[in-house]
Image (cartoon, rainbow, N blue to C red; front, side, top):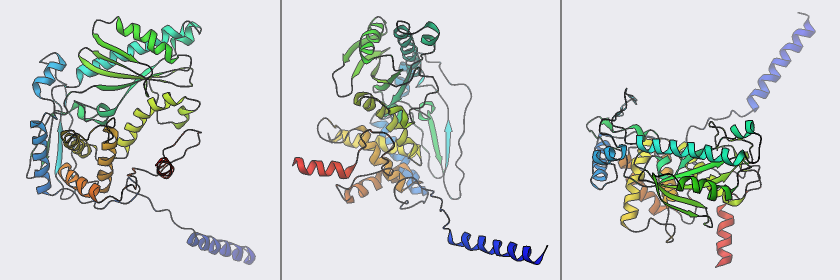
Amino acid sequence: MAPAQEILARNTFLISIFFFALCPRTKKIRYLGVTPPISEAGPTPVEVAVTNALIEALKERGMFESEEESQRRCGRNQLTLLGGVARLLQEANRPVLRVELGPCARLRREIVLGKLDKMVKDFVYKVSIKKLPEPIAREAGGKIFTFGSYRLGVHASGDLAGHLTSFEYVQNGRASSNFGAGADIDTLCVVPRHVKREDFFTVLFESLKARPEVTDLTAVPDAYVPVMKMSFSDIPIDLVFAQLQLISVADDLSLADDNLLRDLDERCIRSLNGSRMTDEILRLVPNTLAFRISLRCIKLWAKRRAIYSNVMGFLGGVAWAMLVARVCQLYPNAAAGNIVSKFFRIMFQWNWPQPVMLKSIDEGPLQVRVWNPKVRYEYWSRAA
């Protein structure tokens, strides 16, 4: 290499090293939430025992579905899930969580939801064939999503919890339980752009009315979130409606894409927000099992004290879920018993009206209203 080229190469290397040293290295964020955790310690044997005692107390108070109710809802005493799954969390000095499959408490609900999904697809086709060519109408699709307590896993069953009948903390303690006490299932009907809300409350309503297994069918089209209420094979269901600006709604559609909110009216956005918010809460929780057990306890506590109702001016289901989720973020490896204890301490000491946030506010690219505590607080101040 010539001297001039050697000098140039050496200087280029030194300049690269200099700029690399000046550029700050991006630190990977390994926590969920807007602040780091208070403690990342795992549960102690005492905390595991407390969690087991908490589960037993919740079972005694009807917060977990009994074997009798499970069999009644399934409709067949011999229904079981074949096979099994084991999830082992083997970390240093931490209890092992063992998960097992057993009688399918969720099966009947899944069958009902499957029937409802098929009815939604038939409804979309029936409306589409009047406006579109047959091949396009056949591909128009339609889909239902669940949200609320059922999707969070604190209903009679849900998500992973829907397939669990027992689990064990193995380290100086043991607990087993079924998941959930019966309640209605919040369900969202998503349709393509050519299907209107009026079709939902006429065509689909009449189809549901004609089904012998559907009873107590009621339409509330003028509600803040328009809804149809029904009992489908003795399972209460609330069904809301959302129209997307898509030519078809595929089975693999995800509602996480903000662009789906483009050009939607407020009622459709409110309907979609139920499912989107539920999925976002689950995504932002570090330990869904601890979150679900803790939320069951807090819901029971709030209902016993008659403060579980947004209609009455208190917090509703989503608000309580967000509060519990925030405590789970602050103690990502804690057992449910410890989460419940920390919940009351943290919320008692919280600097209200400072909002409880699970993530930073994202205004997003669309011209849709985003909840902003500063704007809302100033609005309330002016209103006062």
